[in-house]
Amino acid sequence: MAQYLVVAHRTAKSPELAAKLREIQERDPTARFVLLVPAVPPPGWVYEENEVRKKAEEEAQAAKAALEAQGIPIAQAKAGDISPLLALEEELLAHPGAYQAIVLATLPPGISRWLRLDVHTQAERFGLPVIHVIAHP
Image 1: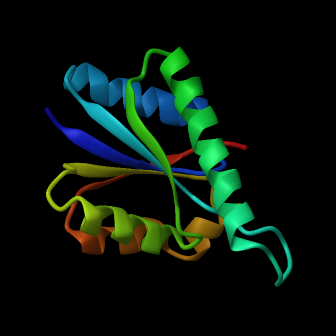
Image 2: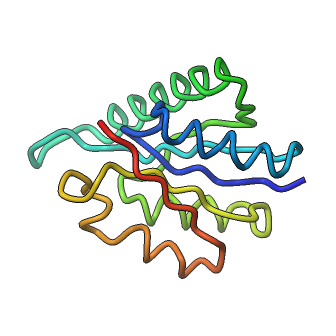
């Protein structure tokens, strides 16, 4: 049974991500998905870290429910650090060898902060295949 780490925030409930996860499921009916939603700080310099983390946790649970309603089994949904790369690294270090691939969902170029930060390319340094999904807002 393969386990995939799905990293998404604003795209977590997107039809494009759901379609990609269904495609993975069709290839491997025993596939399991863990959804990681990195926290996103509000605009400006000052924010309460606990509030940002709580909001990300709520978004993770809402996305889990939305994906499960479409028949996609989400084994777990959790919030992560505000840096998507640090969130990824922390999850992979906490569960070494647990994942076969990373599914990274971003907004399109020009809109996506994660693409400007080159998260999709930098995620490859963790040694797992990165499946990049571009979702529309």
